[in-house]
Length: 486
Ligand SMILES: [Zn+2]
Image (cartoon, helix red, strand yellow):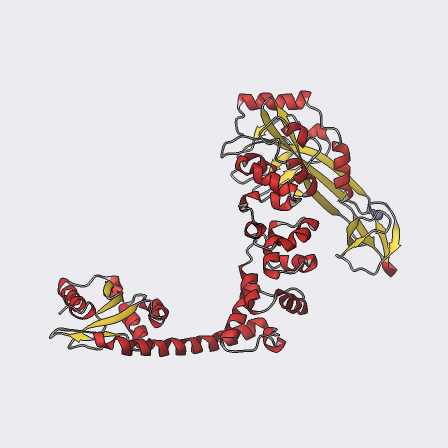
């Protein structure tokens, strides 16, 4: 159990005994709880909304979402034999004791029971002092039990749990980052602070899950928060750090200003912006569909590469044929091979392989063969040009690598990685020579890399350095032949 600093203990005590939950909190909680409902579907398309108990008919399928025609909320559809369903959300309140901001974390949990009646409860389980420290100051109460790898929050009757008994949270993984922030008291709380122009209250009102701590810690971003919030790009404001406002919309957001009304209308997220830049089409459904292929890390590299070969709209078409199950890392390579091999990617016959894995592997083989052919042709050409630098003494000789095979043979004999130089040698960004014993011209001795007519690396087997005698030969060659000084 971690020790809680005295100053913090006083803050916690003040909150427990003198602080009320803010006005409007109950309404806020029931609004969130309202989202914790289902549509229960039984025979003959009969549907029942657990939120407003309205019955209606719909032919939408199980696990799809549909709008209840009575309360107009959108809920997930479940089968009528459902016994138990749970919803959980983290909510938070910002509070201030003296000069310290505290974030109070709550869990809202709703259980839909076998009779399909929802039961919601909300309990406070953690508090966090907002400081400038790198380490986070989080305390949890008795409702939190810690098992090996996850946190469980007890909602049952409070007499078992002392909610005012706080202990320091000491695990090294974060207990909570994102929460739905109660927005109504933010403006007032932040009024006389450096956050007075931050518009965090607007951002909280228009975004769902927020890392409030991050917003409050990042004081450098306040002006950017304000700017983005005033532009009504609230979800982008959550990632204010990623933008450098330069005065030009295009340079700031990486997309033309023509897209601004669309971005504002849909309050687009950072991930959606990254996709929009590639898609360049004001179509939120397409963007949402593509989000599935980007994942949590927001890495859009695969989509970016795919978009070099075919439009993302065509990619969506292809993905839909395969029910959304397309491995983008395979597909982008497939397209690269297909393009290299001269297939017409405007034709769906080539752009939409039926069995991606199979076609990918087939083209990869062809690609490698073709690629090696091209590399070899280039190496033969270079070997001919560089052959004027061939040189020998009574003891040693040196010649340029003349074929891809010669290069592969050298690297095999040397157990070093000259093989990886093949492409660089082929495109002329370095020269490779083989230095050998005049009496054993087939046996590898020293591999020499040359750049701008100077030896930059000479390596023997297992990357050992050449002997003094061998070095002397190389120096002489460099002076006499490469630098052309007689
Ligand atoms: Zn309803």
